[in-house]
Image (cartoon, rainbow, N blue to C red; front, top):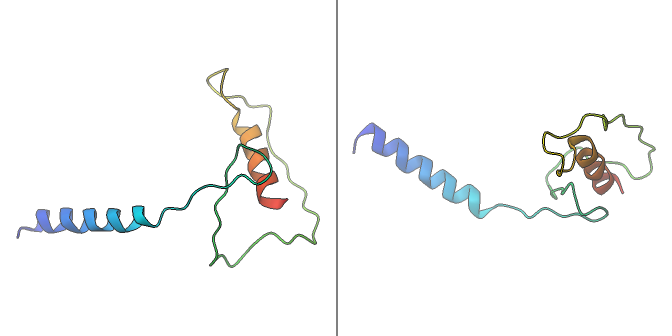
Length: 82
């Protein structure tokens, strides 16, 4: 087996393993800005704290019919912290 074939085989095996573990996005509060549950996360939002965030909502998207990135980030933060 040549080195190129070995690398290609390893890459395909890696992709198959990682695609099988894919998680679905959840949107508990807002139907945009999906988040993922990460059980092994070491830092998670504390519901007893008050967070103050600054998010740029003035910058728009290139396409006028698309949700702006700032509003998408607001939706993600609401889904994450509420």
